[in-house]
Image (tube, helix red, strand yellow):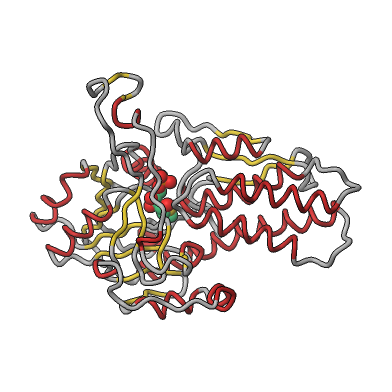
Length: 373
Ligand code: MRU
């Protein structure tokens, strides 16, 4: 299946052999001015790249972390499989601390851990490593397949001439290469359905202007960029027919953690009776979070607000509140565009059906509708 960008991939050191290798990422801190790829050779470099958003977006950081485990394990002592598994557990914990909100990070890491621990005991380190690199490739390939299905299902909602607004970047750059919120736009275009795309700037790190506007332009879209606070005005003017955003974590009741500003957008959309869709793969569902209240919201450094490209833009000593994400209550969500189709309210059962093993493993009860507000 085709990708829009090779956002994150495994780069073998020698041709014809998977191992050893490095994690190759498109450095998103340099866009839109420079297209530079980085090779990450240690778990610390992977951790740092995730933390400073060189690789970002929920599915992409999960894939980066899965490959990050391999770079931390590939030089392990070949004679000590037990130490190998302990080191794996340590790295799973370490990489999982890079960012707290997107569940895909820990989802991918736990999947890698399970892949190693579920094997029969007594296997060599080489076999374990081969098994793990295959698992990481599967995570990436499955994400791509899910993105394409999201695109197919989401495109069914679009009609020629519609105005579609998106926030942050939930495109190829945020995933294995095709995207979630942008995937329906890509598929619609293949079907000759042309929509008008509006992109929120997405303060403070400008994922909308730097990344989404760039990504869509690279793919030949005409894009209209607006500052975040203009969205309500455009809705009132009748220019927006639908909002589609991505998600970093979806709680069991359908509450959505996504980039800061998503909640205000959802409120404005509801006020104007504009459909508000969340596009996400099943790897973004966290049934262990009964509602959005259980989701940790990342607080980012104050300098992201007090400085602009190294220039101070706020008085010294000012208090800063810089949450990177917010929670949109499920009541404001029109539907979830998933790899299985479009899910409408009530969401709890449909979300549960998308991750059946997780429910069995945890044996948890699902929350009642309306638990968040
Ligand atoms: O801080 P970021 O840039 O990693 O935030 C990303 C988002 O909020 C995306 O909307 C979300 O991860 C979905 S990506 C398919």
